[in-house]
Length: 522
Image 1 (cartoon, rainbow, N blue to C red):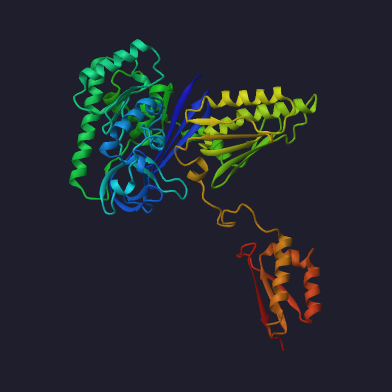
Image 2 (cartoon, rainbow, N blue to C red; image 1 turned 180 degrees about the vertical axis):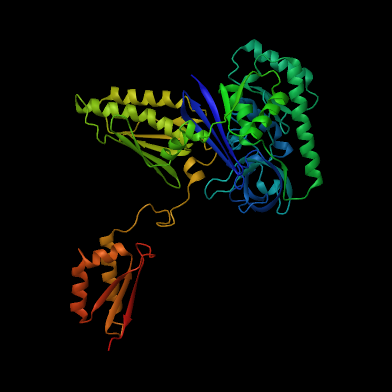
């Protein structure tokens, strides 16, 4: 399978698309004014401690305060338990091989280890209002939620991740050879000069001692620079900025998945070449400069694919379709047969539609970066064998997704409940904003409903109006209705109040906007 990274660079925006055999499967967008801050390290100030939630708000210099849980603010007494938790869980989480490509969950465990361990630390014992602390952004702000931060810093390199707050050595579980795991562990133990934690990533397999030493020194020096800068500044201040989306693509995706990187900016092309010489001097990765007259995203047909990924309705090749609805709490996906009527029997038609939908749903979830709770409403199937086939196909399709997912069995109502780890804002939230026309409701009152609303308001207000004539200003479409199909409403009001009613169109009005006036006519 040919995998390519296509990078479109503009003065204030960088877009990176991952293509598999020419089809876009993931897209990452970084803008100058709203760059993802995941991975950045700040010297912040505790704004407010919340004992009831065992959390706190931390000011790191943005409009929305950052949020930190007690789990991520550990004192010395809890440190050994934290290390035990790391021992059990971190190897998987640390090595998703996409730490930089928008993966905002930093490469370290957090969130639930205290629920089953004692003694527990209270947030009031660890933080006080006004206290200055060094924190790393674990998750950028999503929607109305501010960024989530942690005091457990992690710095990702090409071969390993440095965790200076944890005394632990971990190895990616994707390195399955036990002899190789022991070799890497022994090498690191022999070279480690401090109690810092290190986790080997998948691409560390087979690397020599000199390479390990160089990366250890690089990460350690980076951490020393961070500590020196943090001592020199006061809160709130940026202490360390993570790599840009292009360099994260080079470090993570290109090194592990993609066969080729294509950029349309000569400056970025030269920067990447220098980055490769410094970070991967022995690399033979293919890096090309696109010089075509057509936009690089148009040349690869990426623009059209991104535009389709913003639509609610996605058509299937058979004629069926899926509807993707986003709410504040969850994502609902509905499967429909649409125009597809099948060639054999009804059960086979439903099965084929559901199986086709599975492939498209897995693709759309990854492309749109849908996270959180996802509810999928498949078309009801009567045969157990059909249900098992759909669920088997669903589990298989989601295995290609590097984000952590959990799929529950099909319910009696034909629903599949699943969760997918939120890594960054999904594509819709990144590129879109609530409709100013409907204020994000997704629906408008029908023209007939607006006409009847005007009728009721006029009946209610007419008793207090002293004029002998009414004037109604409305949107042109509503004016057309009141002069046409709904003219009986106006005629009935004129008869009821024995007063003429004039309806005037106002092109600049919102379709639901109207105003009723009274006037005296001699």
